[in-house]
Length: 101
Image (cartoon, rainbow, N blue to C red; front, side, top):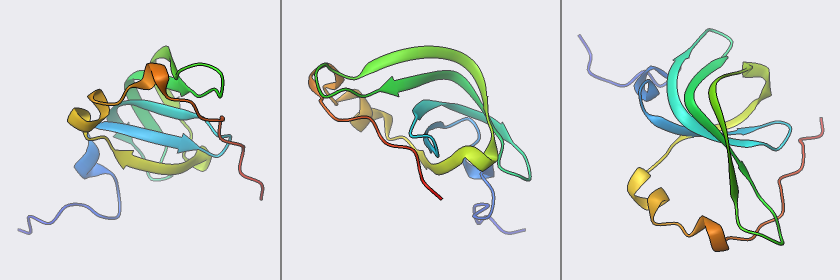
């Protein structure tokens, strides 16, 4: 049996903290609990990071969320130690724009 990670799916990310950027420009973070063959994601303890050029990053708690696979642009594992060291209260950035097809 191979010990290689499942590079085609997201099995290696189950139970890990992930961050997702959606096609409509939202950034959400939480624990990946499941996914299916069309990359629908079940994310627990989900929160949306709301960026602004005038105030720090706001965290909107969302609880358990299903993110449709056709709306996922980017998914990645979060380095929690590095993430916790970020000063989100003083971070300024414009919100991401939606992807245009």
